[in-house]
Image 1 (cartoon, rainbow, N blue to C red):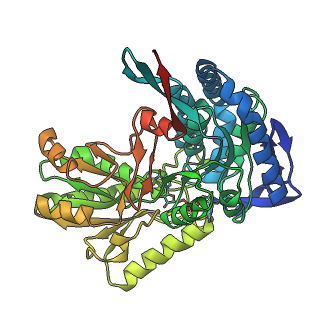
Image 2: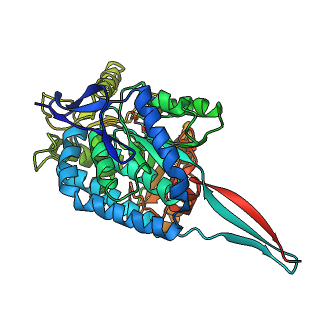
Image 3: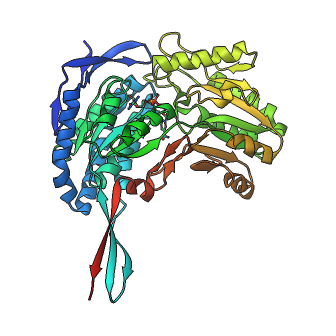
Length: 469
Ligand code: NAD
């Protein structure tokens, strides 16, 4: 019989009248049931968060920070159980899944290192002026399926540390680990501070329309981000939007191809290429193009794609059926247009698996270059001039992240400075830390998460003028 999970509202387990199926993407089989929240469940969660807010904001900052450390430890202490559940619902192989769970625990602890003292902006004989940081209210957290636990931990740690309360909603495709995290954290946090609910496609819009929320923190696609901004406008909810990307990685001619090939490969295909900041366009200098292409194709042929529960799998399935069908159709379209696809090794025929696939120098305006595939389909693009490749890299509606590879850091830095993105990595990929703001330029988002800047987005400034005479 399928395992059944419950939501957490006001510190207690809460069942919905209806349940929804959760599928293991490695098999395509339903293996669990998650609650499908109704408007009444949502109202109850928002009411609990509203009721908890005055008490939680009054808890001294240092005590909230200490509770964030405990919250991080609680996740770390349950890492084994959470990892298995994560792999079953998300598909990522166990070792890499565990990194996400540990990352989530470490994030709570990392954010707790920040302090938030009032800033004294003027101190004269006449007066003192202080800027205090106040919480905003009840935060609505909406998360996608590609990094369900880590991205939820970013939102929860920021919002709660700053004194807000929260209702968190995972993706309908990956609700379970977040529901369990909600139960685990509620053993540490006061009731009502963190409420975790799950539901179908209807729940997200119900949340963004709910007048009880003061802020929406959203991670997901650009199309949904635009809908959320529209919904938020009605009652001026604050928003942070972490959206899609089509990240360019530029490989300069002076790299050691043998040394960089595997790192470049993982930067594109980690999590079966379902990463917002993955390399999605790989620009390779003409002089090393053929050599690097061969190496990357060789890697695609030997890296094991399989059920994440099998110890030797490095890449899992696409996370859900619509995404699987979408990327499969993109691959078929590329073939139909006469592009050269370099396919990786065999993949299981059950579940949502696709081979790791490279596209050999497609035209710059082809859909495989212009669109975010969010799956294992990577265009390799030849270039010969640095100015030209920077222009091509920036010629995108997205501006999330990018990378430059070179044996000369100064040369790489000169390119990095000219990329219109929120993050640039030099000779590395996919690095994020609690200390460093992550956010997108252009259609990749509004605002940032992480770092002091990220924390500040969950606060509002209050200026106090204090007379001295
Ligand atoms: P999605 O936009 O379809 O869904 C994300 C979440 O929003 C889900 O929980 C979904 O249920 C909810 N949702 C859907 N429609 C909604 C609506 N109208 N109102 C409110 N909520 C709604 O995205 P996805 O397919 O789950 O995730 C993939 C996308 O997320 C990719 O584009 C990826 O680049 C992006 N992403 C961005 C970041 C980042 O930090 N910038 C991180 C991870 C993923």
